[in-house]
Amino acid sequence: MQYLFLLLAIVGEAIGTTFLKESDGFTKPVPTAIMVIFYVGTFYFLSLALRTMPTGVAYAVWSGVGVVLITALAWIFQGQKLDAAAFAGMAMIVAGSVVLNLFSKTIAH
Image (tube, rainbow, N blue to C red):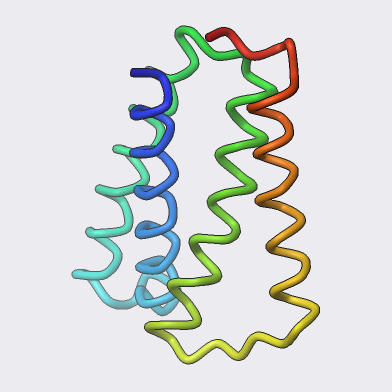
């Protein structure tokens, strides 16, 4: 369950951050409200994941995978341009999360 909670936190953060951009500095009420709802959900599910996962590991995975997902959403929905270096950097972030999860002895399984 810890990974499901973490996944929900990551997805919620990515959606919340996407709507943060759409809120235009909190001047648009609907995107602002959606952003708040997703951020509250994000921290709720992250807190559930932290019941059994080490904080550093959960945060590393949450932030690393979140960066990739947020970037993908911005690329798809907001027209953000990505070059080869951006893709290479995101691949390294994903690789770091995989190494952390597969080979680190700090993760509570």
